[in-house]
Length: 245
Image 1 (cartoon, rainbow, N blue to C red):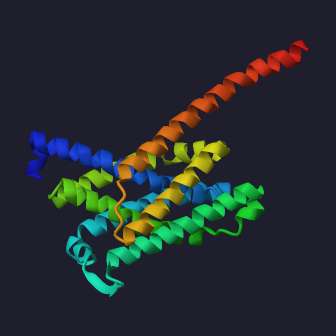
Image 2: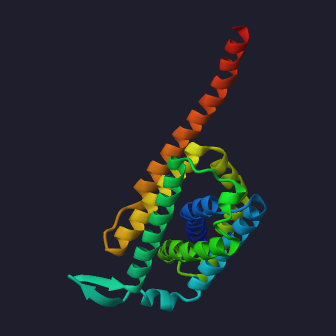
Image 3: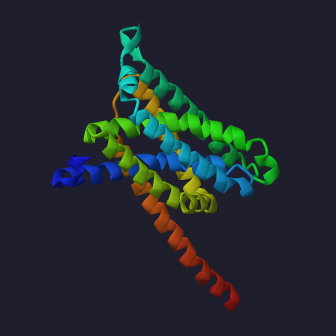
């Protein structure tokens, strides 16, 4: 903890908090989209439970660093590809994320209504189980980043807690924004699909720099936000012309 009091320690800590927040965005998006399929009265509770579980899983993994490092050891080899426990988790998480995002996109394209009756197919319990499974997968990126930036477990835990608190505070607003704007939701689903593909190929030891992916997504998001503002400004002008006619 003494390392946190130095200038280098503060810089590393700040960088870690920022990275944890950025890496938590995909988690928040998944939780927001999944809980959006629950009845309205259960959505906020599911988001709070989901993010709280994400925090607990990350902290638990930080205190199980020896076990986490052990997951990188080769379990078996297939056609010269050395497969570890971590690779299997990444592959499974990637496939699950690809399945969930493509299913959501299909439902949107087919124009299926999201009434409370249609949402009944997803129960609160099944939503929490799915959130836990993805929390585990997303936590690996988070913890591996933490290990690369800081060596003090206490500092890592503190950074993760701060990042999770920020996510918890912003979760409702992010979820409302995604659910309110269909184009943003489609963009978010595309983002999750891309992350799923990245996790899958990473399980096959193909490294893709995530910085480029996150930049492309945030750039697309910024452009879409500008489009939303333009459409809002255009509506009053259109209404005025109709009134004059």
